[in-house]
Image (cartoon, rainbow, N blue to C red):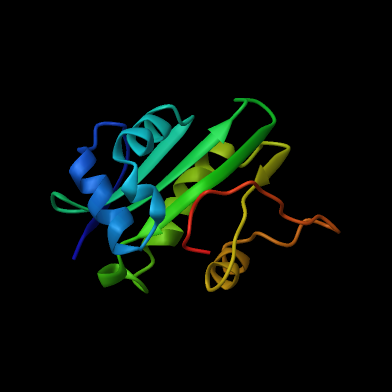
Length: 135
């Protein structure tokens, strides 16, 4: 299997919703808002198995100093194949010289992000006003 990594915003909404639904992310229930959010991202990196969307990550940034990674998903059938790392590596090509790269991780994602170079940010505490249900 050859996974292709792309930086494109040309992704059909039905493919996006299928990926988010497969991961039980509540944003799949708001397809219009989800598509708009992804299209307004600073960067959108996707992973493809031929014409099937199997992974996706987005970045929000000021373009100079700070980048925040809100979403990184890999289709459950493709977990453990290094696709998440490929997406993170593509982001690192683009943002490696930024002053700050941030994300919020929970559950099993914490170990993944540690493996790819992220660490706990000092004494910070993640905080949010959140309308989802998957956490």
